[in-house]
Image 1: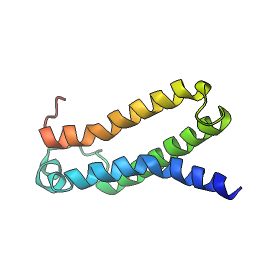
Image 2: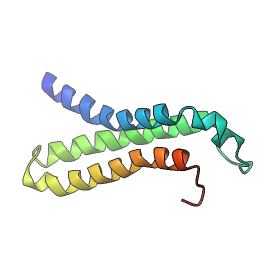
Image 3: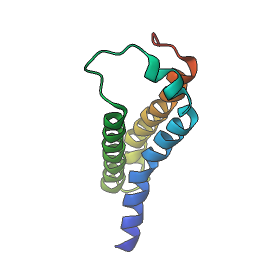
Image 4: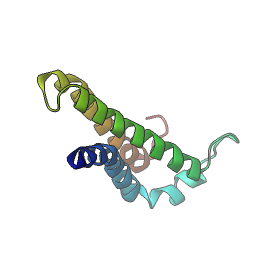
Length: 107
């Protein structure tokens, strides 16, 4: 039972690691570039983005744990769903450095 909690916590925390690294890499670009962009009046505050991504990453991580658990761990049944999850997570993590690093709104 105790080992299961370690899996739950590990899967749930994993997406946050990339999110934190994306923020860390781009933390200087946000006040220099992003905050100075002309945004619509309905654009959420930075605090709302933090809250939204915390909820999203937590949900994605826990969902990946449920898939792993229900499909028998690292079984052949879990390879495709967890592989697709891993691919979308990698793309998700790559977005902030590309967006803030390139400063390209059309991208």
